[in-house]
Length: 129
Image (cartoon, helix red, strand yellow):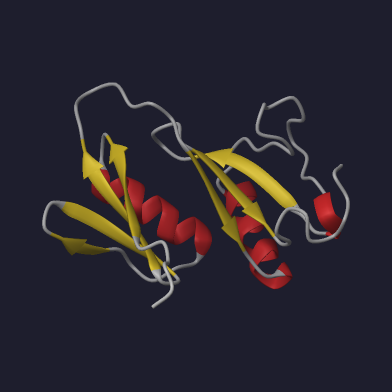
């Protein structure tokens, strides 16, 4: 059996709200539950949201989408008036990037986690910018 990534736990102040936000933005099925977690299934990997009262250290999560899916996701970002950037350092607000001949965008979830949607894996198009 080949090793694959199965799940990760994401700290959240509102696990159900955070899971719902992610599933809606990405156009995924409704979140489920497993034990104390609100679970968003992304392909064969699950993102398991856990509630915490502690300070949340923002993490970065990147999602690969098709061009049509990117259009739909980006429209949901804009329709919610969410701030977005072309880069992870937030130096290019209100823009998307075109790395590797695809498109990419960064935005935050309600807990400050940095979410990224790209249409081409990095390094696949031979372009760095």
